[in-house]
Amino acid sequence: MKITILQFSGTHEWETIIQNALIHADIRVKRVNSLSKLHIWAMTGMFDAILANSATIGQYRMNTTHHLWETQSHVTIITWTAEGQKTLTVATNTLPVSAPGKKPRANAEEKNAKILEVMSRINASQTECQDQANPLPREPSPLPAIGLHRKPADILRLLEHSGESGLSVERIRAAVWPGEKTNRKCDIQAYMSKLRKALNCACPGDYGIFRDRDRYILRKIGK
Image (cartoon, rainbow, N blue to C red; front, side):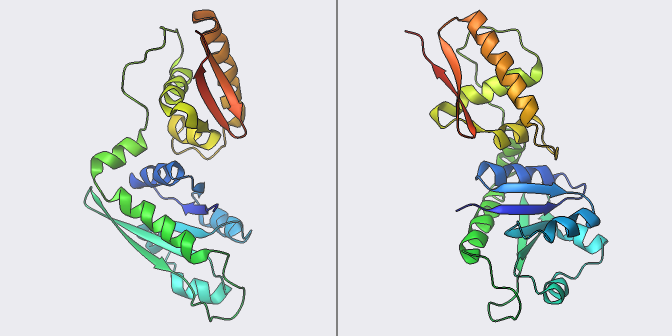
């Protein structure tokens, strides 16, 4: 079940924490930071839900219920409010199934439940949220020392600790370029090429980086 969210972002520190938590749960996120872009992307019909800070909604004087009825949209609008530094309060706004206009999206209730489940896990503790915002592993690496710049070094550490499950391009982008809106696919491909060469020079025939559909996997191949 694929879920795609349109995240309307302001400047709150929780924005990236929430984005990374959603991506970590394999939920796709498109992040926009202006009302005009929100309207343009919302009209595409590509998204299962729109996510926004209630303060940002208030800043633009948006009435979510009125907006849904006015546009006859069955896309769920999810708003959140940060209470202190450890808790999020989440609210959902959607038209009733019996409302006229467009039919609800397939599996809408299941998708909304999945999104809310992820949001509720963010409430667990501030420490967990901070780990999701900066998910780079801290354990020492068993790999041989390789002279790398920060970003390729971060990617290698992520690959190493992801095991056979590997990492998607979106997961790498969210961890290494948090908060950015570009997909960074070309940058990631370039870094993977450099990492393969660096591994081959440092430990020839011992490790390889493999591509499996949309995921990169680091494997030990030496004896």
